[in-house]
Amino acid sequence: MPISPSKKHRFKRSPTVAYLSITSLMDMFTIILLFLLHGFSQDEGAFAISQKLTLPVSTSIEAVRPKLTIQITEKELIIEGKKVSDIDAIANEEDMLISPLYENLTEYAKRTVFIASVNPETELNREVIIQGDKGIPFRLLERVMFTCGLVGYNNISLAVLSREG
Image 1 (cartoon, rainbow, N blue to C red):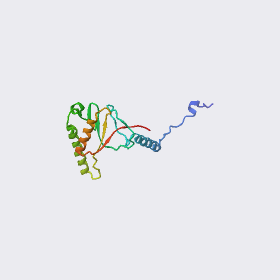
Image 2 (image 1 turned 120 degrees about the vertical axis):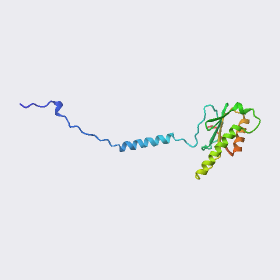
Image 3 (image 1 turned 90 degrees about the vertical axis):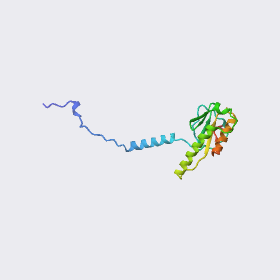
Image 4 (image 1 turned 30 degrees about the horizontal axis):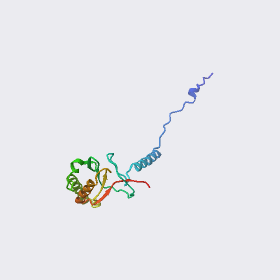
């Protein structure tokens, strides 16, 4: 009498190799990557506001373009994230010129002139945006604007929070 194989061994298959087509996976990951990059890219109208600042509210709807940023908090004067001076050190001066600000703006102006001379496609941009805390005195804001004008940054914008409605 012949011996029949057990059920376990009866359906034994030979090992097969499975190949994974990564073309569709690459398409999917590319779409996800583009979606995420688009979502994280900065809009021209967006810029960082320090937590030390409380901007005034306005009904202006003009979009913000990238510019040199000056922040005036209640304690510090900051250009592009770099502290220039303490407000206490410059607040009681009678002169309209703020010397530390003038020196730093002159440095930035020289940099933009150099970049424009090296790369003719680059536009010489002398625009500045001032993010001033709503609690700072107008005299200080006026002095900052005066100093910017002396260096050649005559196109000055003030950052405000937009009031909806």
